[in-house]
Image 1 (cartoon, rainbow over the protein chains, first blue to last red):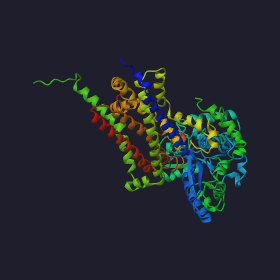
Image 2: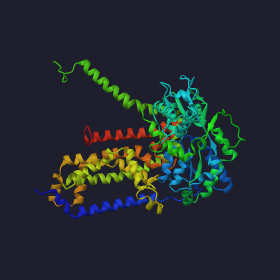
Image 3: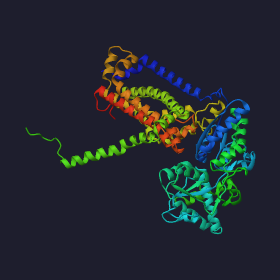
Image 4: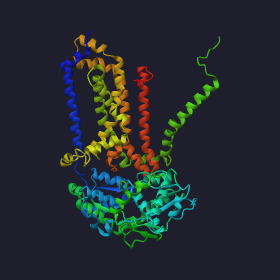
Amino acid sequence: MIHPTILRFHPFRIRRHSILAVFGMVCLLGLAACGKKSAPGADGPSLLNVSYDPTREFYAEVNQAFAAKWQRDHGVKPAIKQSHGGSGKQARAVIDGLEADVVTLALAGDIDAVAKAGLLPSDWAGKLPQNSAPYTSTIVFVVRKGNPKGVKDWGDLVGDGVQVVTPNPKTSGGARWNYLAAWAWADKQFGGDEAKVRDYIGRLLKNVPVLDSGARAATTTFAQRGIGDVFLSWENEAYLIEKEFPGKTEIIYPSLSILAEPPVAVVEANAAKHGTAELAKSYLEFLYTPEAQTLAARHFYRPRDSKVSVNFPALELVTVDGKFGGWAAAQKTHFADGGTFDQLYGKK
Amino acid sequence: MSHREITTESRPVRVLLIGAACAVVTVFLLLPLIAVFVEALRKGWEVFFESLRDEAALSAVKLTLTAAAISVPMNTLFGVGAAWVLTKFRFRGRALLVSLIDLPFAVSPVIAGLVWVLLFGSHGWFGEWLDARDIRIIFALPGIVIATAFVTFPFVARELIPLMESQGTDQEEAAVTLGASGWRIFLRVTLPNIKWGLLYGILLCNARAMGEFGAVSVVSGHIRGETNTLPLHVEVLYNEYQFSAAFACATLLAMLALVTLGIKTAIEHLTGHTSAGKH
């Protein structure tokens, strides 16, 4: 009997192998060629804005307005591309090589992380007015119509049978604001008794049935899938829910919340590489113009420009700088590995 | 003439079992499919076609097709080669190679995405080298193709190995004794024997390549109109409260599934098998 291994020695077999090898190399080279950054489109420069979750609708309008303005001033229309996701996740992607020209994230800590990776200078916050935060927001409660669980303030969130929806502070910027707002309230309530504050936060986390990765996923969980009684939400997202699901929800303003300052910055290393430094800078400066500030108000952000009229209820707002000693400190104490969140979450 | 039942179960038991099977099929398979089409058309045909004509949707379709067009042929070539080597030859390490081919099936898609970020990301093993040459892999088309190719890697080989195993090497040996060259044996003897199994493998590979979410999501970067594949675009739309548009795009994926099933049934019909390529 002839053993099939004799096939192995046939010259044509060997040549077939080399054909395969050559084909494989061509495939890989083709891939690498695709990977070369293609030249910007003939009709204008392009800019990538990597942002967090609830800004989708806002930036869709800002991009249109800015592109029109840039075209008036420079004769070419820039293509502005968007990427959205949980703020922490987005920062991670930029660090891993997502070539954002500008980042517009939920909190300074996430841009600090990008700065630490060497993509922009560590004093980025001073490059634009008001801590580089062109609009602010706060954290409010969204409840089902008629507020069946009678939720009025932070203390009501730890009641028996109250389900609280909030995203994961490890990946979501909004969730970190939620967490700090709850902490600030408890700190005031219990006169700074940290044991009581920790107990409160622990009980609050126990009432959270799911931790989504981003604010938008949490919104869908609450509004679309109908899970939970209270949704700790960005103020702007809360109004958006009212708009998208009319008559289903109510917004409750707690006695105290936190001043959320979502910052913006040019990712200088990427912008320099793409030759978009000027475009990126104008784009962020545009956010401070009355036109963009009006858009911000329309999407329920609190504009910095006092001339833009808004009617948000006034409430006591603490700041991260004032209450927690800045984002770096807050991040380290509460959200880093082994921080208070890790200590208190899952402690059943 | 008396009619004899071949089953021994009583009538109520049979009705119950058949009823249960039908209920499961309806709830788990039919209902979701119907729901996709109903939701997609909730706001009418106009919104439906509008969502499909949207620039971001078209770009997502194009990217999905491109990724499949590169990764499916790559995996087909590899799968045929691997199945040929593994079934027609005996060598040291063969068992290990068989297990290795299955690796992408065993690994969670998230990990399948993250490993490429670890290798090709800015801070990955080859990140610096790639950055210096301005080559982008992650958060661009090559990364999406690599992730897709990785998760669909085993489909063709897995389909062919049992088939070629059962066919043995007799026909090839006969061809060798008649003086045929290796290449000729492959084209004239092996390939005709496996063509239906091969087609079926390619079909499954393609369906998964176009539908892959997890691994691609990790390496995509989610740039609208640029690195969102069709499944990712569906998620984006859903998260933007554009439910009808999301489901309109989902119908494209559902259609792909239906076409895949149709071709599969046709293959089975042509080959006269109840299952093309048994597992």
